[in-house]
Image (cartoon, rainbow, N blue to C red):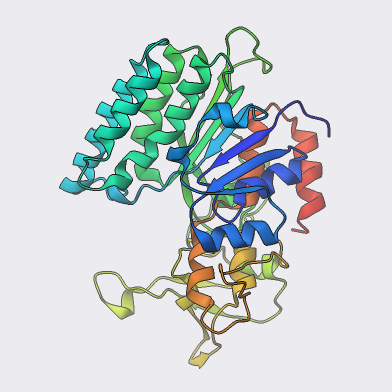
Length: 369
């Protein structure tokens, strides 16, 4: 499919959103990523990559891109209920207001002043979540507003996306109400919740018409103990681990961590259910059936539960692949941190007005479930 859009991916990771774009026929100008291992995976997969810190770059250096996507790391406030997390959120809101107040003509000095102040935070990582907003506002000041902006992160970041949405509206963007998507509702064989922001430029030179919306689910939501064929008949059943992995055996996945330190409270999912969230520690999960231990998922299986191709070339920075001794924890972390490409396809299609028929055709081309 032909498209006028080209993507730049901030905090690009091993390539989840880039693979989604590729599946939809949308070119990726580059992905900026500072983790050496993720860069090695991207490069092995043939994805254009700039190794480095997004804070050191500007939109003007990538003028071929007119769509901004990203999932900035948000470790400092992902547990928003504790005092430290709440303080980090408050800091982000204050800096977001400062970015929004920057005026053309003096923006270089003002942006630099904000950067200096961000370095004084107790945890410098707190400021990383502001980078997509800086990029969006800087591109707007340069007279080249991004035609679409897509941001994703864990649910705790939803208040940040809501604040960014209000700022973008005030600058001429149409913004879908940020919300939480459940990945199993988009054909991902895994229950995972992501906070999503979608914005479209609505001013002069806008190439996308109409207000954006979050994507409509294609599959039913998973509920423990509910049959997968129960519920909305207009939606497909959620996808099981067995389907996605092409395994014919019965197994139960036992999570690597317990609730409140109680091993008996560890989460369990069976082969005929979606996986629980694939985290960076999922490589430690055990497979059992009854009293019989069945080992663990291999890394390619964990990648497949994230909807990456089974032959995706996961790498460490030294060139080690999934079979190398010592690669399991490093590559497992990459897999757990990634955006599921199948979810990304739905989100990008919604952001860029790709019709349902084209989206479904692309999904069928890349997935047999």
